[in-house]
Structure formats: structure tokens, C-alpha cells
Image (tube, rainbow, N blue to C red; front, side, top):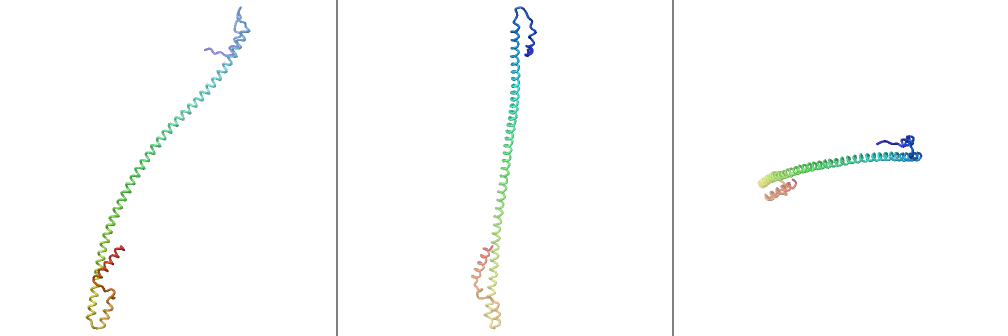
Length: 200
């Protein structure tokens, strides 16, 4: 394609040879001027269109770059969301397993403590029963000895005719309130043992 500028058209005015019965030179020159002017307009329009096309292309390239960046950001956000979801799921599963393990441990420990407490309670009950039996036996023994001593003193008092021995016996023997029959001594021992069991 031959490049033709308005200046080339105007220069052609002097290049045409004159011939007989040819075109009217003035009309040809006017037409060439008109062609040159129109060509200038077309050139200016073409340059404007090229500039506009370049601007559109630049804008389109910018939009495409922005679209690509947005797509990349969207893909990255989706990947990050999936990673965060997976991480949260893993952490939740781990926390659940740890919670279950801790709950099982606490339950087992509580069962052991309950068993230990029950065993300790049984031992304590056994110790209490043994203590009560021992204490009751001790009290009954002491009451028996006291009763024997009272009987001995009573017999000594009855068999003595002198006042001094009687006074001595009276000073040693307990008050009449402490004298009791064997049945009352046994009841006293049981009452003391029962009171001790309540305190224990």
C-alpha cells in the first residue's frame, strides 16, 4: 500500500503535463486541493481513532490486569479459607479428643477416689467397731473390778467391830451413788460405749 499524504497531493499539481483536449487545469487543481483537504481530515480522524483505540487497548489491558489480580486474589482467598477451615477442623478435632481424654481421666480418677473413700470408710467402720468392743470390754472390766472392791470393802466393814477400821473403810469406799448392781454396771458400760461411738 502506497502512503499518500496531503502534501503529496498538493505537489502533484505541477507534475501533470498539459495536453490538448485534456482536463481543465484549474478544475484539476481545485479537485486536488479538495482531495488534499479531505485526506488531511481522514489522516486526523485516523490519528484520533488510533489514539482512541490505544486508550481503549490500554484501558482494556488495565481491566484485564485488574481482573487477573482479582481472580488471583479470589483464588488466594478461597485457598486461605479452605486452609483456615481445615486448620479449624483439625484444631476442633484435637480439642475434642483432648477433652474426651481428660474427661476419661477425671472419671477414672473420680472412680478411684470413690473406691478409695469407700474402702477407707469400711476400714474406719471396722476400726470403730473394734474400738467400741475394746472400750466396752475395758469399761466392763473396770466396773467388775469396782464391784469386787465394793463387795470387799462391804464385807470388811461388816466384819470389823472397831471404829477406826470402819472409819478407814468409810474413807476409801465410794459414795452410795456409785454403788450399783451388776446389771446397772453393765448398763453404765453400754451407755459409755454408746456415747463414745457417737463421738467417734
